[in-house]
Image (cartoon, helix red, strand yellow):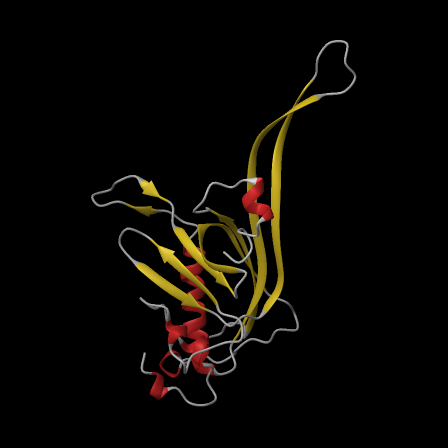
Amino acid sequence: MNQDAVTPQEDKINMLAEQTANAITDATINDIIPFYFQSLTPEKNFFLHFRAFLDSFNDNYTGDWSGTKYIGRAEEFYTYQGFKRDITFDFKIAAFSKGELFPLYRKLNFLVGTTAPTYGPNGGFMRGTLTNVTVGDYLMDQPGFISSVSLAWEQVYQWETEFEPEDGRARLPHILNVSVGFTPIHEFNPSADILQGGAFIGK
């Protein structure tokens, strides 16, 4: 959209529709913490930019050990089976003007859509959607997949009560809580040496 048409009362990041390129490279559209999703499908790639109204961020590392019991031994013997990393974070969307409702909810629709499949041409097999996630410099275009998106409303959040689509108004909450579950797919082979060297955080 034409950024010159955005009034000073409207948040420029909230007003952004889905983009084919990273819009925060524009000096007029910036945030203290870069926060966006890049959806990757064979047919279409697009960016979803949100304000970094983060409520929580959890980065969980799990080593999988399998136990085996032997006759005559009270304790189990363990063998290492694998490694897993899961990231969860919560954030808010907040419309500060009537014109921000439709763009925000359109981006939410695209975000929740990353959990649904896409299909190849001519009724081909279903495929998952990969996503690059950026949260400041902690995650920087980190590839992976979004396993869950949850939306929640609280009673203290007011609704827009007027319905005027041509004026950008819809009967929707001005604020919503968004929870995302994300599983990274690393571009390197995870190992203890790499983890201790700090390659996981900041990528």
